[in-house]
Image (cartoon, rainbow, N blue to C red; front, side):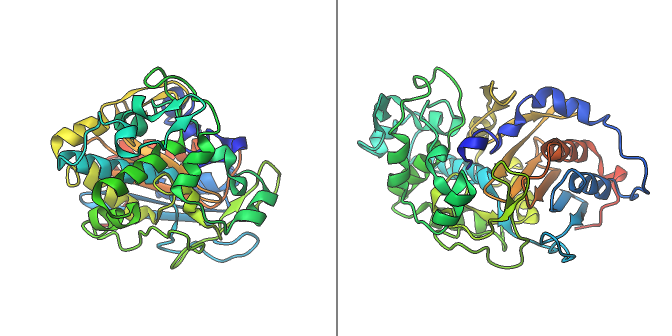
Length: 389
């Protein structure tokens, strides 16, 4: 999810990524101070030096697991980053939602070519929006043309809005209604534009198809089978359960405010999951390794189309991103007030990387996160000092 000032930063910092990632592999390191011997630790500290408050990254493969930390868990203190800190994963949630929809497709409960109107009669209507012309596939692929609800959510757009509405509860129907006040970005299938509303609708369709909530399906279909012990769907509960660092948002100013408390109901299906980098790596490994989806559905998920505003390609809830060593990986960026994450896996899920920061960071923070993920996915286990899992 994202506000109007950062409407495309919620994964959208992928803009110009195709060239940026290739350049990242040869970026110089800072000279003036002794550098850690562990390459992951060096990169985590480089992210911290761009202005992030706290940083945590983890790399996993079949025979190794390595974590690195930098910065602090709270601004202007010396409190260390928690070892298995939980955070709101933002739009990385979309990969979970797409995986559930594809499981239902594999079970014959729905089709990617079903229309939104078939499942949610009358919900997508008005100002030129027409659910009878939009398919489930187009929702997951961001080719529906449905306007993004993010700019209509006050808590995401300004410090005053956050303070006034951080505990406000939204229903999915209310969120879609806000989006329907705007005209479509383009006719269904005639373009590509990132919209959180697509995944709010996908969560509503999941509920309609199985008779249970999106939150329950995340637990039953992904969290429990993969033993993601630190992953949860908080619903309207505003606090992050368990160990966590404080999150900070600048709202376009030079200083950040603490935004750790947030009722994330505005991000159902699109950005509300709480997790850890370790659980995210387990999820990506299982997903790309074929443990969550049958081959036909995994092929659908990883079949990508151009996403011009990102400078990459996008499948169903997954971005296909160039690697600095050649080839590509699949992953997703996430951001929801005060926490930014980047994660992904090699095409077979054999190697995974996840990193998060606890603030907006500085101008180079996003690029430094991209650099870390790309370089670590290119690195072989023999090149890394990671410990055995």
